[in-house]
Structures are given as C-alpha cells and as structure tokens.
Amino acid sequence: QVQLVESGGGLVQPGGSLRLSCTASGSIVVINDMAWSRQAPGKERESVATISYGGRINYADSVKGRFTISRDNAKKTVYLQMDSLKPEDTAVYYCRMDVYMNTGRRDQWGRGTQVTVSS
Image 1 (cartoon, rainbow, N blue to C red):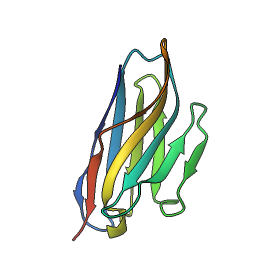
Image 2: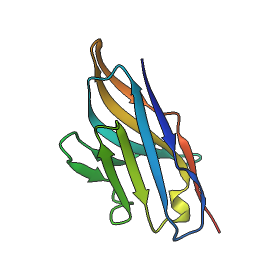
Image 3: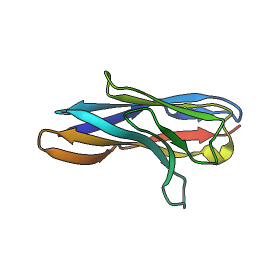
Image 4: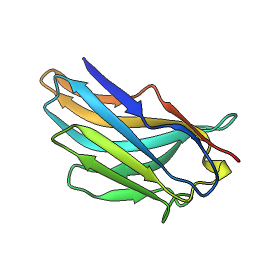
C-alpha cells in the first residue's frame, strides 16, 4: 500500500509565497513522474506542474515563472514552491505520483491541501 501526505498549505496574501511538500510511504521500488494538480471551487481539476524521474519539467501556462517544482528521490518527496501568488491560485492542491511497487504500478493521489490567497 502507498500513501501520499501533502503539507504546507494555508492562507497567504496576494504576492506572497508558500511551499508545498508531498511525501510517499509504503513498499515503493521507484517513483516515475511526480506532479501537482489543483481544483478550485466549481472548476475541474487542472495540472499545475510535472517532474519526471530524470528531471524533465512541465508547467501550466498560468504558473510559469511563478511556481517551481522539484523532487528529492531519496526522500520520496516532491515540492512546489509558489511565489507571487494571486487570488486565482486559490484551490485545493493535490500531489500525484506514478509509483512502481513489487506488486505492480500505481497512479497514487494525495488527499489535498488547501491554498487560499486573499487579503
């Protein structure tokens, strides 16, 4: 069984910064892609950023230049540094990992962490 636990969400003023973390636990052999998505009230979930095992990165156009995704393979952790936050960044942020275990492959999601950008 694999679990992902996110942390780092909260309330921040426009222009501020937050750093999200997501750590995996369980019988994991290797983690391929790690990613962050978000879902705002009344909207569909959207991809924010993805980082491959080799370090290839993709960002949504809406966060390019403001958000930075990184990973620590030894710690099985993915980070999302969010700078210059805007009210439209308010959402529940979810991490996702493409996990390989001895028993097979699993696309695992975390439970989410709330980010609220408001003055």
